[in-house]
Image 1 (cartoon, rainbow, N blue to C red):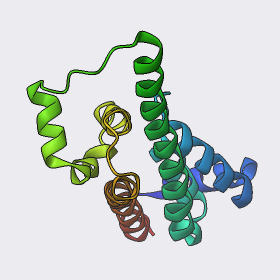
Image 2: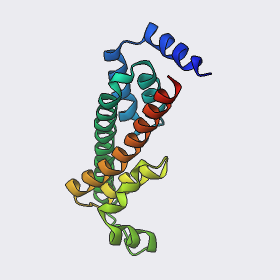
Image 3: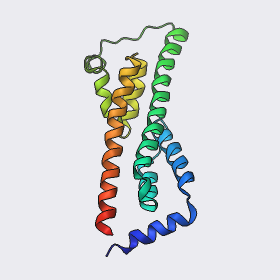
Image 4: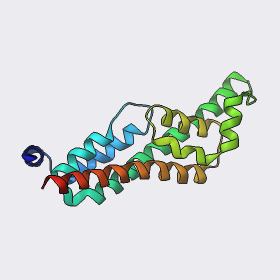
Amino acid sequence: MFEWIADVAAWLQSWMSPGAGLWGLFFSAFVSATILPGSSEVVMTALVTAYPHLAWWCLLVALVGNLTGAVLTFGMGLAGRHGYERFQRVRIDESKPLIQRLRRMGPPALVLSFLPLVGDALVLAAGWFRMPFWASVFWIAVGKGLRYLLLVLGLIGVLRFAS
């Protein structure tokens, strides 16, 4: 019934080595965490399907790549605000309700950074509003780590069920 999974795994192994796959996953996860579009979940699914024994390495590589991209996005927000205030000679009005809510929630709000589109904007806003860096990185890692953990556990479950 699930022979097609073995066929897909064999096809993927025919053109993708484990090392190249992990580097591709890192790059895909990095790009996915910036404001550029990307889908590291698809790459991770292909890699875990082809090489199930690398599932936990895939989780680690994807998390590091995604976290590195999020740090870049955070820095872009920080630099963007600095540049805006410097060259426009304007101070940002932070009295708007949405900004106040984000400030009130603080870095724990960044656990939602795993969400498509909204998550990247949240990380960018965290940098723009100068949230504490290390606390922000921690909460971003929690959110993205849970997403990848659920994906890996689901893939392992499907692959075990299919075999």
